[in-house]
Length: 239
Image 1 (cartoon, one colour):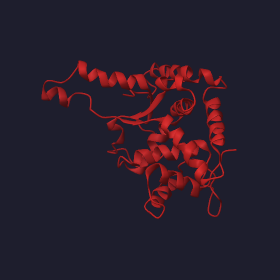
Image 2 (cartoon, helix red, strand yellow):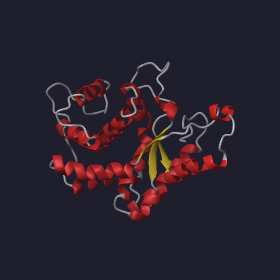
Image 3 (cartoon, helix red, strand yellow):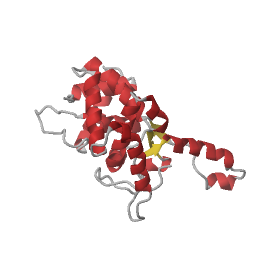
């Protein structure tokens, strides 16, 4: 059964980000996110020990990856909240890729466009959705984006100003899963097998009980369906 307390979550974040145990700067960030009710379901009140399941742990880890950009915590929380349902398949396939080498070239990345971090005029409601949340993007789509610049390299200043920014934020769910499998047994009673079981349950939820061998194709199909949604559905362009 997967479950860790706040102290163990704090330790995992410190390991993944190379933050010393005696560095107190991390605690205010945790408290600020808790005041925004993030992640949901673990702020149980004073004197009650918080229990973080895999989904809550992954939300926090993604949020701290975004905080590394210098983005405002409220914006980070909103980006993760808005994009979360679509990110679960990508995270599950990322875990699968730690075990199945064949899944690695076809896995999904978690990405954000540069404009996603703008706070201007958005207010400070941590539950308000954002137009550009974190998104799942096929790895081959990222390769296409990189190669497209060779075919359409700007030749004038006007083309640069009106063109595609030369940057994306990319988080690899496979590396995230691998880090969790290595770090949690070192600082908690959980084993790598417990992490695997929690990820498998997450994938079963995301893919409605489909066999593991079908997860990668199912995730890519779900992403394609979302991109082809009607215009009134705020899907947007992931790249």
